[in-house]
Image (cartoon, rainbow, N blue to C red):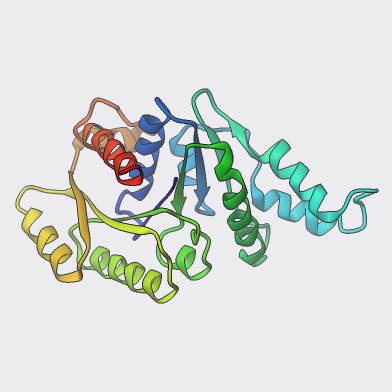
Length: 247
């Protein structure tokens, strides 16, 4: 199962992705994919010393005539599977990164899309933390996703981005199940969320409260406390998603 986590920047999509990786990896073989050029997921997971697809892209660009007896495809495959997939204690990590200079992301995105399809056979669950906004949808980076989680807060901008993601996914014919998750929701804002979800035809998976413990950990650069309110709710969400995939 491939779970893509999307939404406007600042809504907490990376938080949701990180917690899903932590909880799902307790029972399943999980690959965490950081599809955001800023590598926020890698940082939140505490991953260091990694190579990225962007770096492999640069090597490929500068090694066009230096493949020896290998084909370009074999060279790329060896670099990706041998150097880019980072093996953490309980899960594996694949980081897209960014090309140097002003290079286009198209090549890297195409690589990521192809890799996701091939890697799925080796993992029970792939969790993709997408770049904020609509780019991952328009480039069809996640066209093989089984589930798309759209994370929003209670703001008008968050709702606007969520609606655009939903509309674009429909236009492109993506077949993934799509759910809305509201995050950073303060007391009294729940009705705003439920009204929005109903008006847009979103299935509201859950409402996650604003959590001071998460805010403090983020400010200090510390790991997310797994006993906080938000973490406990996402732990239940992980179980719901598995059940949805295996009715």
